[in-house]
Image 1 (cartoon, rainbow, N blue to C red):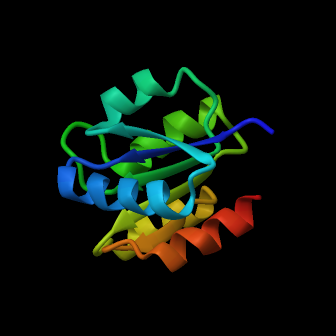
Image 2: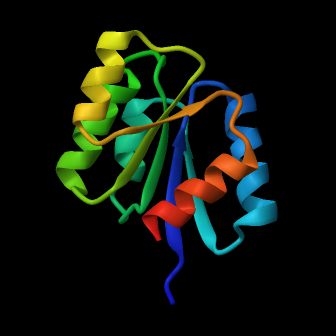
Length: 119
């Protein structure tokens, strides 16, 4: 079976490190790509993705704008906004696009739930 690929996009190196640790210890069968912003993420998205964990507040483009671009390329991609807080209007827009939410800080159990859903 081919490895599945997850991309974490967050301008916080600490947040990326926490997700990397969860995947490297508990979900070793996944390949992890990391980007610090939307532009870097789009460059990395040349390879097929199965899951994208996107910070909402980032310099340049926000998580929803990035999600739109990724979903154009990969319509079946599982996309989750990772955020501490989000305005109701943005929450509704994201939900209408089929984007899920993960509250920061990310817990291993939450990632396990998501991986079951997209399996």
